[in-house]
Image 1 (cartoon, rainbow, N blue to C red):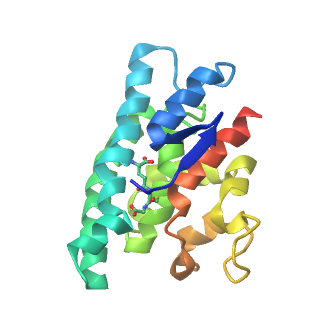
Image 2 (cartoon, helix red, strand yellow; image 1 turned 120 degrees about the vertical axis):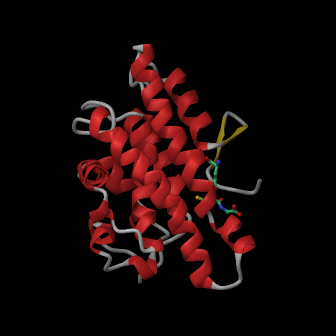
Length: 197
Ligand SMILES: N[C@@H](CCC(=O)N[C@@H](CS)C(=O)NCC(=O)O)C(=O)O
């Protein structure tokens, strides 16, 4: 589909974030990304699917460019589906979360939350409307691998976009104009590789 992430591992090109995450979970059992308990595992997948299938494709630029030539219409369309998903997730996460989406352990659902929460304000959806999502986002943002994975922290990031504490600044809306569309799935993938080491 000519999308990222696309990661070459042993000459095999891995695509699709959730499939990549599940692959890493299986290849690196010492650092599971899915809980063993079937119900907890279901909940992690349920949250992950809501982000990855319920929201992400509908606010992806490739989709939005087909929706309208007008930027305002594209933003309105994306914001509608982000809110719809976040409304459901906010309720769900109130029950399932502790420090992170499900308990105190970074799992697949958290790897989906962070890029989508970072992207929300680009479409005028403030995380202030979603205190649970915002709280988890901030807790995740404190983790060093997460900071390291941010697009604005990459070696080849243009100088005018490069800054410290990118994730937090996005919450305050200061750097929204400079948001990179591609940061979303890079986040998850690079974060994953980082925590495996
Ligand atoms: N279902 C895919 C979605 C990938 C995706 O939407 N990637 C975006 C960047 S975040 C992309 O490459 N967009 C360019 C396009 O769709 O043309 C996944 O989970 O990996």
